[in-house]
Length: 117
Image (cartoon, rainbow, N blue to C red; front, top):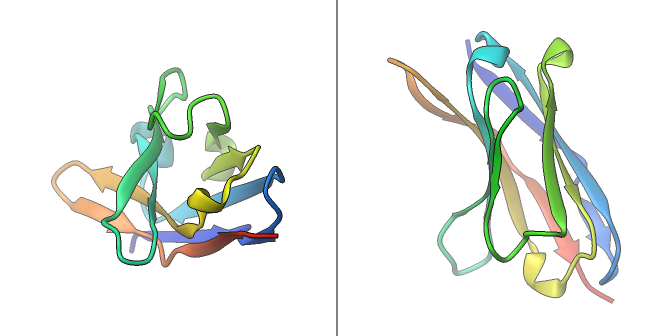
């Protein structure tokens, strides 16, 4: 079965950095684009970044451009989100998502990122 397991969240001061990881299993990882979303309290879940299967193309939300970098290691079935220059407004639960053709969308359990002094 498809599993997505996020890790790497935590509490960090404004201006700090974190790297999130999402380990995937149960599907041919390199064949599918992967995405990172986040959901802050009282807000809708929003797309943060996504990356194509081969890793050659990425897109970012305007709010994170220049600060966050999505990448993947297909040999390890893992997608990453490097987050630099973190702001309090980046505080949210971060989820990775895979959309598999004919099977639909799969989500991880989420990892909490809190940015506060």
